[in-house]
Image (tube, rainbow, N blue to C red):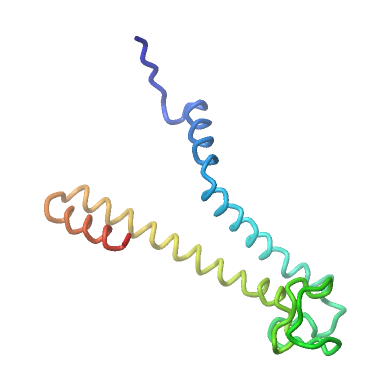
Length: 143
C-alpha cells in the first residue's frame, strides 16, 4: 500500500478543496447574493449619473416621486421593482441602501472573525477551565 503525502500548497489539494466548496449549493447561493449586491453597489452611482440623471427627481431614493402613475405600482420597464406607496422607486431605494449595508456586514464579519480567532487562541494556549468556558460560550452563540 502506497501512501501519498500532499502539502496544502499542492495544486491537486487546492483543486480538490475548491471542488468540495463549489459543490455545496448553499455556498454558491451565498456567493451569488454577495456578487449581486456588490455589483448593485457599483451600478448605483453609474445609474444615477447616466440613466437616472435626466429624470428629475423621479429616481431620487429619498425624495423621488413619479407623478405620471398611481402609487403603489407594480414593476414596469421604468420602475423595475415598482414604486412604494409614497411614490418612490423601489429599485433606486434598494440600490442606494446597498453600500452602507455591505459596509456594516463586512465590518461585522471581520470583527467577529478577529474576536473568534483571539478567543480560540487563548483557549488553545490556556487549556483547562479557560478552554471549557470559551467552548461553552461559543456553543451558546451557535444556538
